[in-house]
Length: 123
Image (cartoon, rainbow, N blue to C red; front, side):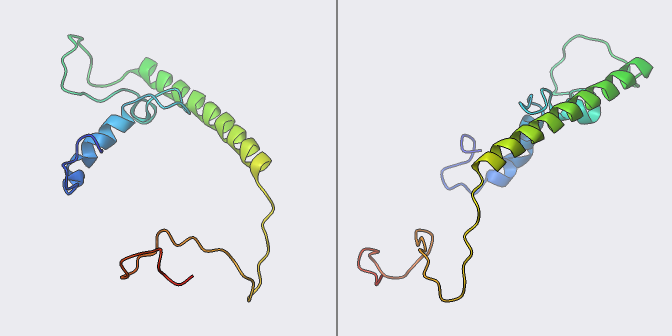
């Protein structure tokens, strides 16, 4: 989106549908296929004539191929989820219990103030 928005960044909504189409038309690393191929069984028409003659209604062969693709994607996503869970569980630390009155460190980088200098604020 950064590449296409103007300097003031107020036209991003106009580019959102194109960005969504482009994202869904690309092969995803977790599935090995594009979301369009998984959900529709084919890639949508992008307006480029490839010279191929295709039928409008898919036959039984294409339908079975689509079911096979969905089953493969489902298996791959399950494996990916298991791997992600393993990595998360390995890094996860036990939570620290806090009670009322405990002192904690607060990061104030996202808090705005009307004073001109952050350095001179009271700590």
